[in-house]
Image: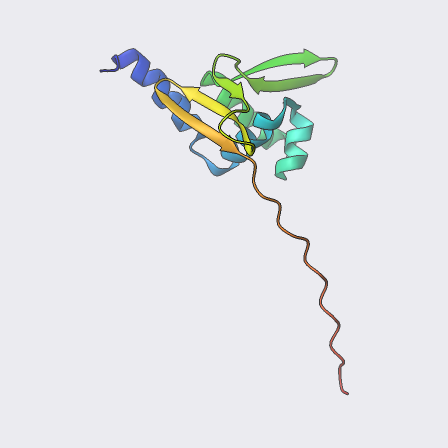
Amino acid sequence: MIEYQQARSVATMLAAIGEPTRLRILYRLAAAPHNVGQLAKAVGIPMVNMSHHLGVMRQAGLLEDEKDGRRVVYRFRPELFTPGGNGPDALGTLSIGTYRMVLHRVPEKPARRPRAAKKVGA
């Protein structure tokens, strides 16, 4: 049986990723470390909101950060994330206590062809 303190730590981490924007951030970080600006642009939210989400995940113990000049680069804590594995489409496995979350590449949607313009009044 899991001890209370460990269960509490796991619950905090799971709560931190239990939000749609943060799940999208996890997907980006599984591919590679990113700075706040890169993540904000990729996810499509303002940098201030991105900083908040990253702070929540860092406080929960999922992420670590490192200064790179004026930028702060975020990545998974290495003891929690193992890149690759589980097939060619796997980005990696996030290990939270006794739970494992395998992150897979999302298949790219085929580009949509523009529709032909309708003739008006013909």
